[in-house]
Image 1 (cartoon, rainbow, N blue to C red):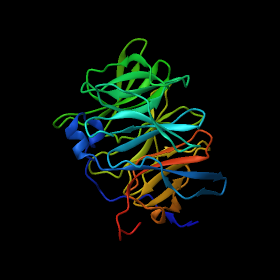
Image 2 (tube, rainbow, N blue to C red):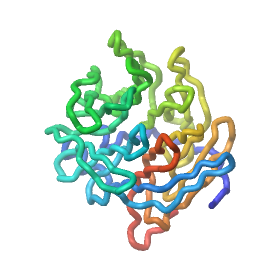
Image 3 (cartoon, helix red, strand yellow):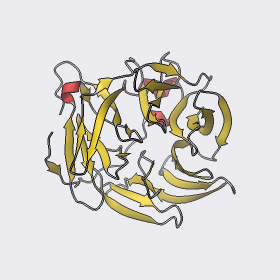
Length: 308
């Protein structure tokens, strides 16, 4: 496998525009790229990460995005538009590669996220972009949380605490807020954040990418007990999405390649070039809790398009 390293140094960049997955309705679907989700076997070793051949498991001309693995690693949930009208939540079974519809509501659902306890998941639902809960079989479990602003993405820190990406408007930037569900109080933690809100394995810290105008994007984490934010390192150039491996390494995509980084080190290291598997423009990633699989959101490579 390739092993050359990339120093995470970025030129000055503008704030990343909000993608259509933060929006709702047919206009958002028209703006969203026709992404697919590829599944590849993953091997985590102390000295290297290996990625096997990636297989398109969604096979849908419309929008397929935002994979989230189930706690037992048997499959993953994802948001998909299969009728050109709205998005619902679907499930891919890893063993059979079958796709099953999970939610059937009149609203759009985005960003499926497993809730603490592992028996329910939450989604960003409807034009109000509230968090709604469902059982893993799609049974409606009711409103999980409604915010004064529009929620784009979220991550559960505990049964009573979550981090939310709240959309800005006009000159107001997006913000990271932490919600205490017992008191219904939201504390503003950071502004100019990216869309990857992740819980770091073992520590439980909330990690995110900070994208302030005029500064290189950095990976930061918030201690859930003190709410203090610290910088872990610089983001991979040209990328905005991350996934934690269960061993504590971060993985990100750049064009058709995957890179890994161990916090505390300097370089991002290339671990796979998936151009030969038909991937281009890798974006979101998800790694199974057992570390054996990686789900990769990408645009399928067009005929004659170079993977890198």
